[in-house]
Length: 112
Length: 111
Image 1 (cartoon, rainbow over the protein chains, first blue to last red):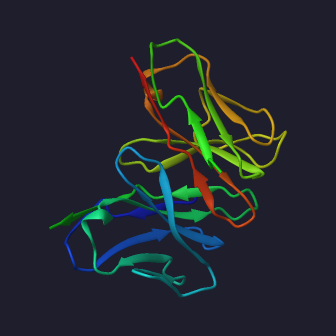
Image 2 (spheres, rainbow over the protein chains, first blue to last red):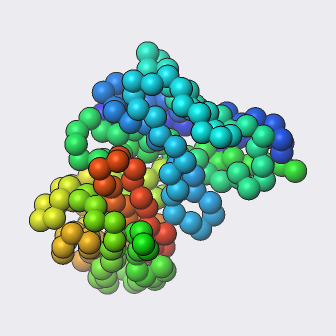
């Protein structure tokens, strides 16, 4: 079945770059997503990438997709303390239902 | 636009009690979803409704029922709550753009 895997924790210093990695199994996924969850809050869509793209950049965020290896990464440049949160990777299931499969989430800790 | 709203925000139930979690969206989206979030497990899909009048099981449907009351509203019912259903429940909806919007969540504790 479909599965999405992420490392559970990442700690960086303020001003450094953060790279959060994700692997997925469904090669027919149409879209891959990154969501951010702050403590006690719901999920906020950060960015998504269509499966025929290799890279997408949006201000401080860069998403890289290696479709051959089924590997997705999110790079946050100049990481700030406000970036501390849980980041979820998700893949769309190959259908028109809009169903998503989520990873376990990576907790990003940004130290001042 | 309020986006996706959920009520209640918090709830404590005793084992065996029933309750309904409410969700509404004002974005005219066709598809709506219920997820549960447990520590270290990400979000798991309970039920979804691809369009008004249809519902389908997700990954973890046991112990739950849903109703798509109209295009705006999608409710989740626990008929006989169990401690294993202690979780944070999120409702979401999606339009044509593949962007899934989430509500703020309901934190449920079953004792």
